[in-house]
Length: 131
View 1 (cartoon, rainbow, N blue to C red):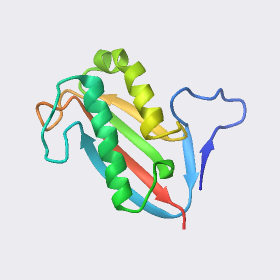
View 2: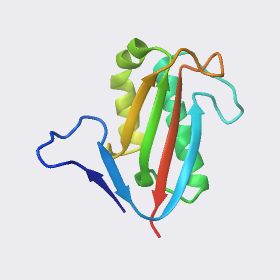
View 3: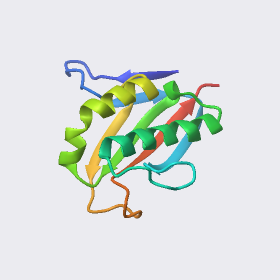
View 4: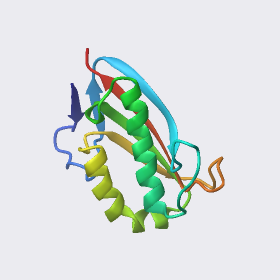
């Protein structure tokens, strides 16, 4: 079970939680990029790569016996802030479908580049599976 943390008097953030408390087995998911299970990019589209990266996060989490509601933290690394912001509508729709809720502590950081030249986004995640 996880609990989003919202200090008294703070407004609720949009699209993430300020913090999350949880107990159980911790699962640390390495940065996932927008390629498929064969490590091949199917598109250069930012939103499509972000959606594939989210699918990859969920696949790794399932391998640990976890579910999407067990996610407690994500860090997004994007190569272009404007491209990310322009794709938010499509990413948000897919996020709600694939992840379900925004009670996840999240950060997004623009970086100069990612290790894979074709990658536009990389998502790290942490989950806690209740015992």
